[in-house]
Image 1: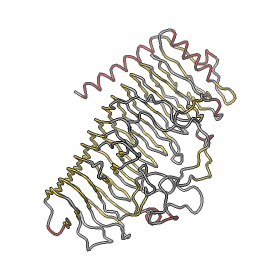
Image 2: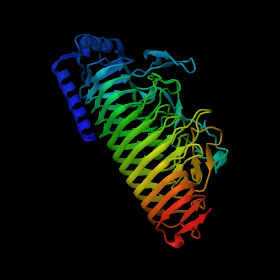
Image 3: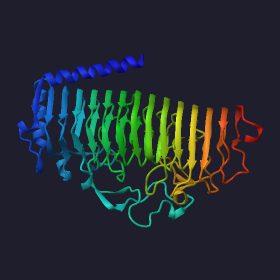
Length: 518
């Protein structure tokens, strides 16, 4: 049934594209656009789009050449088509971008290149490039300091992730910059296909409160040193398909959230509604934060997420599921994924975890949502920190399953500088980064956790904070089957599996593998 629904959506978008090509066609050069560095084309591009819209819609063509622009807006029934060799490049002058006043702080900020609101049957296609001109909006030789969560509770204190010279892994310090490079807000039937997006100074491609989104065949390459340069952000949307994309971003490569609002950012309509039916498949991802992030300060529940055939390499975190607000995160299936993570220097959230699941308070009041019904199946991981499932007394993750997990945990060049810590940033309080022993798999405050066919391999381990293969605390209903693991080589006298203060255990472990404390 889901396949048929997705097929019909693809067919619908194919039909829309064919109709647009056969209908009205408008070239931006016919309305005064000029390639080259000395001309701002914002007005010409907008005039082309407006004229096309007045005829009922069609295709707006960007021919080969580099066209400098500020902010423009798409309308319903418009296909923005970038021919091979075409580049829409954001201006280096912040004043060329449309300004807005944020409701949360009353400050003035600027949109990015494309802002589209309440449009239907709208698309960006072709084989050209949209370039956010990141070079103009950062201090490339100045590293950004760790500002949130502090370092005083880490194992290394003030030496945590410290770089003796240069910028290390970044992030670099931003200047005043445009916000999201491309926004679709409250839109229906959106297609973005085949184009290249690069150099975004903030989030690259943002869908907010949209219904019916297809993203296919994109190449998104931002600098890995720039903060907040997410690849694709899907916030409070439904019926979204992301496939066959190559994304390299300083921040999260793909973020799926239930935001109704988010700090000073534009595009939000303060709508409270369920976000559901989101598919991600056949993608290669690299990030200095999370390859895929689900959740954070979500006002809306997000459910029915399917992730398959994804390759995450060279990232800080692999897949992260974060609950900090009232919106729940539920019905998530992750299968056939390959994850490689490592420790990084600088102010990046995460500490080398291939998988991170946490449910802790991130706001002062109100009820927290729940993480429930999450399946990881056929997952290969290689990382420099452990897998984390970190619940709290007021929000206990439930029905979490790992099936056929193969995890190689090794030390790396930054283990002494950054290892042996947990990063829960985004929670309340100053103790968000803190020292901790590192089991290969650590879970606390969980209900109905099931691990089956799990293999843990230790490689090149010397640090004493690497301890058990599995450590699970404060659990209710736990199933452990076919666990193949040893303790860390740095602690050979420990039992591989340690359980603390739980009830409802089922297992087939050998007696010499398990230590239990009530």
